[in-house]
Image (cartoon, rainbow, N blue to C red; front, top):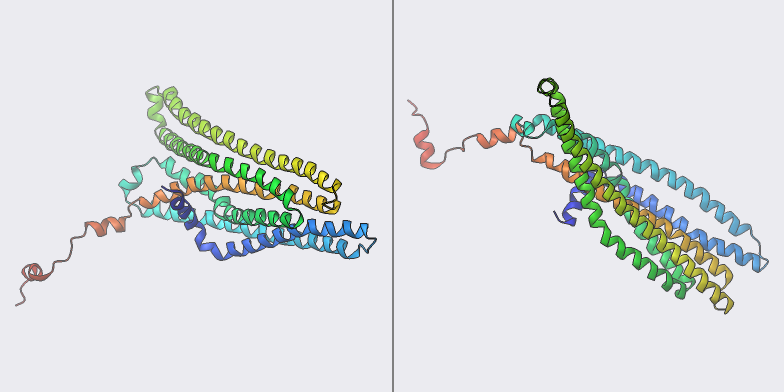
Length: 343
């Protein structure tokens, strides 16, 4: 399955809640706008100090930004959390109903524990990926672009230094993300196998004990657990690498900005207030970069879970089976020959 197809599968769970998600996105963008305004207001404070101007305006503005930002952030958190719970609820209800409408051979062809794992474990991964991750990715990209745009207003030389560091981080992200997705999907697959084997073994526990097969069955189940853990650890190591790359890239950018910015202040081509505001934006870059890396990881987990959940739709229901088994209605001459004579 290609990446666009995988994203469409995940989006199918979030689509019924797109209006609420849009509201959450609007609030997220409003919060980002407030955050982008803060360094410029800080520059206003510093310039007012240098010019012996009144500090009332900039200080009041900072307080208003803080209060409004807190209210917007709280509302956004509640909205996205609610959407996440509803996505999980809808997925679980749909799966349970599909299980009971499916034909007996279709259900029994898979270990019951695996089906339970999909309804319980996989659906949990949809909570963040189908709601917060989607909004977070869009907001993170907008925040990143907006931060770079505000940096451009302050100083183009320092912006070029920052962009070079960001490009390195983005390239490394794009290289590592597919490997993280594969590891997470394989981990979930082995968790499903573990649940299926464990459920089947517990169901037949008397037979297992009568045959003295306790250790053998335990070893088989433990092997699935070890495989799931190994793939999970691989994903964790890759995610840790992504996080370290992100933080190191931003820290390197800040060090370069500080050094080059101090040189430009000394040369008289940049104001101290402008350098401080630029540094605030550079520190602020950690927010969108961290948000993007976190939500990309959540999205990868959610896509893997969404594929497994949608696979349940392949179960043939009794109604579909009956429709397929029903004979096609006769037409034309065949219908006339088959029709009983009326006397």
